[in-house]
Image (tube, rainbow, N blue to C red; front, top):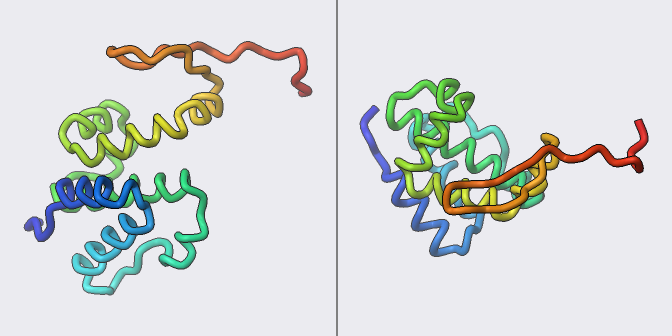
Length: 142
């Protein structure tokens, strides 16, 4: 597919210029989507519904939208990159804007995400995150 937009650089610009305004980013991605599909396929959520979502949900949708558009732009199978952690990590190194989205996600929601999968953030080093399994609490009811 011919590149008709500059996904990485424009996404980075929007994130930095709008202080991570995810509504604005969603509109940008929706516009690209409409250009690519000439309106024959609608985005999976309308902007009015999107604006009502919590920040974390908006971020997740924008990350998925970015991945989908990136895959279309680079003729990559979406399922391969979305399901493979190693390929996702590679993409954070390749695309500055995707790196910014993922850093924002970890900075603002990392503790909650880790807790949801039974881990606790212990430390952040220059080599990455130090985590441990959450200890069972006597206060928990089964």
